[in-house]
Image 1 (cartoon, rainbow, N blue to C red):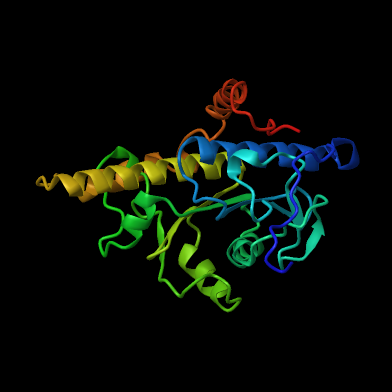
Image 2 (cartoon, rainbow, N blue to C red):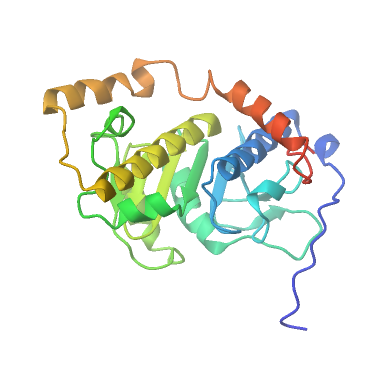
Length: 267
């Protein structure tokens, strides 16, 4: 019996009428973000996490460990504190992954400006994380991160609470982190902003892998152009990321839902 698969049933009754409007809206936004990360090819089976702080509380929402991102709904999200204690979860044998609160809890605790945190193990992200040069400013998308990207050396699977301090230190005030030999991490004042940053960071990594595989001689802009361009792409110098494109992303999810065979994210 110890090796039996955990009990799992997606037909949980909606908890919309049992939580505050604030929490339900947070659940909707986070569930949508999980679906978008899946839609844009940034998942790793049932691994990784996206977390969101419920506004006005110290509680976080996180996925149950064992669900595909395309299965996640507003109701299926577990509510935990920053130490990983489960406050509430659906009636299921599935729990949460310890790495989720070690990494995410550290950032949510140290950065009160952060509402959402995304961590991925994509092919391109892992490739760039293993390159000594890190992310290179090869194109406009990558230039956005010049001077605004942290690096954290690999210490093994993120289950050691002592690593929290070093993750927070290496992220600093940035909204993006390359976890060496591991993957990518982004955060933001909203989950929409964190998603936009992850999408752009992933795109820059994919482009870098493609360019380096081509073996062509590289052309890099001047340092002055790099710094000026990076500044113009920071949230304080433009419309906050996620504001304009998020409604379009939700429309995309609604269109995809029609033939997906999975429960919609909004239940």
